[in-house]
Length: 313
Ligand code: SF4
Ligand code: MG
Image 1 (cartoon, rainbow, N blue to C red):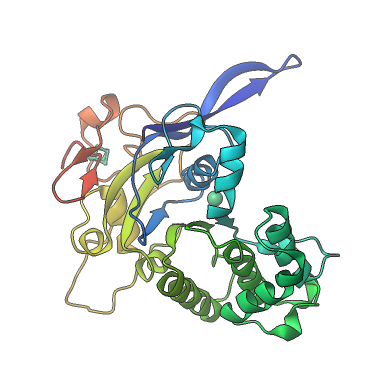
Image 2 (image 1 turned 30 degrees about the vertical axis):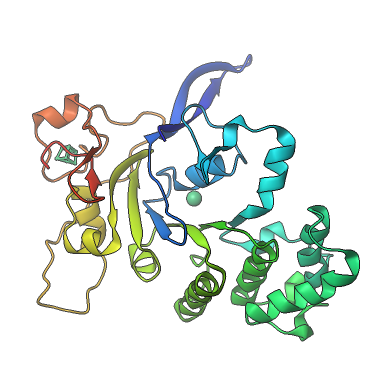
């Protein structure tokens, strides 16, 4: 709710603060239990920072983060520690977070031990169980990270999150580094996990076609701001924000008669440290009018759970 995360820009010998990057600039959204919310935008739009700020891996600048009604930034440390296992992060490349000298089974089991969630003698069984659920086998339990393919490593990443029996999983570009054929397998695994464990996902991706297959709701970010949120069906059928339309027009559609306006974005993403005035999208928006340069469009609900920030809507 009103989440902000600003990073100071330092300069000179004395590291004076000369400005800030508004990586997350006053965004609000909610995810219902059991839902998958897809957070979409180009790289540099602030999606990952949203995920990390929710999990308190980095501190917020302002705003509120609530998990099951509990304000995560207003919790005594031991309460936060108790909730930690319930909220797990899955990375784009789990390899970077795996110790190359630790066997996969130990890496997964460690988390259980650290959180005191299972007695030592039960850990191997729990690890086996979760590896099997992720499509790996007992063969893999004593292997080292380098012995795994990209897709298998992502299965390990998912297993390591799942073993803690979480309620919320924040997955940050979890399939972006994988071949398309493997992407589908991993997305199916995410879906299966949701069905069997009732998980809630925040699924971060730059790729709308990936999000389309998994998410019930979608939020579109641009330079730290939320431009549009809607249910998946509504967003794909009736996108309102020019940026969403541009992203969608790049997604191939199987039904040719469902013609979409083709909008090709010109130019690069502006420097987040020096974003355009007014509507941050105005430098690339084909529909921009004079007002767009001066006035920041407010995010408004336009019916149902469809919200948008654009002067022309
Ligand atoms: Fe385009 Fe103006 Fe709408 Fe921004 S407010 S998306 S610049 S039309
Ligand atoms: Mg990112």
